[in-house]
Image (cartoon, rainbow, N blue to C red; front, side):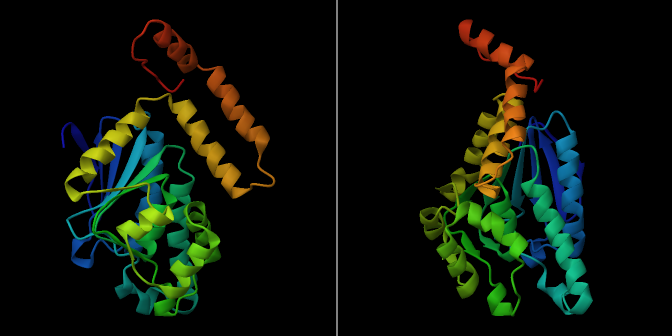
Length: 267
C-alpha cells in the first residue's frame, strides 16, 4: 500500500492513504473478534477520521486472511455479558454501531472470511459492502441465548427485508457470499485477489466527488430510510442548499465547461 501514514497501532490499526482512512481489526488469534477495548476505541477512531479534513472515505477491514471479524469476543461473555454488566457491555457495542452509522463521511466494509455477529452488524452499519468469494455471514445470537437488541436491527432492515432479517436472527445460520449478494446484504462479490484493489478504486471514485454532495446523498438516503413517513425534510433541504451555495458547485460547473477534472475542496 503506497503513501500510507500510520495513525495508531493496537488491536484496531488506523492508516491514512491519501483521502482514504483504513481501519483494520487486528485480533487475529481470535478471528478479529472485538474485545471491549476495541468496542471502546472504535468511536474515538471514527471521530478522529471525521475531524481530519484530508479524509474523505473510511474503509473497515479485518487483518489476515481468515476473517473480517468473528463478532464480539465470546471469551469476555462470562464476566462482561451477565447481569448488570451486560447492559454496560451492550452500551459499548451500541456506541460503536451508532458512531459508524452517524459518520458524516462515506464508509465501506471490505469483507473476507468470517463476518459474524457484531462484525456483521458493523459491516451493515457501513454505507457500502464489498466482499470476497468464500465469505461467511451470520448473526448467531439465538444459538447463544442472546436476545438481539432492537436498536441493532435498524442496520439490518436498511439492507434486508423484514422477512430476511427474521431468517437471519431466528435461524442464526450461516449465509454464503452468493446468498448475501442475492439478499442485498452486500454491494458486490469479488474474487479474493480483486477485493482490495476494487474496494480502493471505489473509495477513490467517491473521494474524487464533491464532499458536500456526497454527504448530502448519504444523509438523505439514511433519513428517508430511518423515518420514511416523517423525514426531516427541512434538514435535508438545508444540505442541498449548502451544495448549491458552495465553492465546489462553482468548481464543478467551471470544470465541466473547461472540459477538465474538477478539484473539490469540500467548501
